[in-house]
Image (cartoon, rainbow, N blue to C red; front, side, top):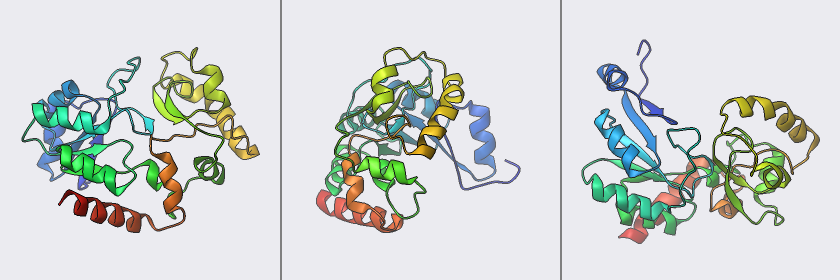
Length: 233
């Protein structure tokens, strides 16, 4: 508020109306990431300018608003349809597993106003992804990504490596304490090149990231959007 920016986005919770209005009064658009219709309604009631509607296909942390809540398995297209049906006039973007022009077209066709990309950009030139992570996204030994709270105590979708396989069933809902606890182990494993330990956050379409390896992120965004919108027309 003291030093305004164009957009402020929230996740893991919905800000109070007083927070939203304070930001809007200085010209900031407020975005709230939601994982279901109920939270989408709450975000709109709080005054959000637009929403990021995130499905179970998204890599990394799912934006549920309670720590112990196990995410559902709804697809991006189905969630978009549900939110659009309940909130016909609310602007929102779709997030989760969007990695091809066909995915873009499907999300727009289901009612989203735009799309948000994540995993598909992880091997682009500007991503800053470490070499171990980049290689893992193209490694054929990894055949599944799934939500796990084994790293942070909060559900996040990752490639299933040895750490996930061993600790997924016993990890407590203790975010961010578990995140702090596992941090040194994760860093040490990354430093030594042990791919079976660090979190390899990845959405359902992680394989497509290889198609865009080492390309400029802006070029990838433009290509997916241009080709996807062409398909919708």
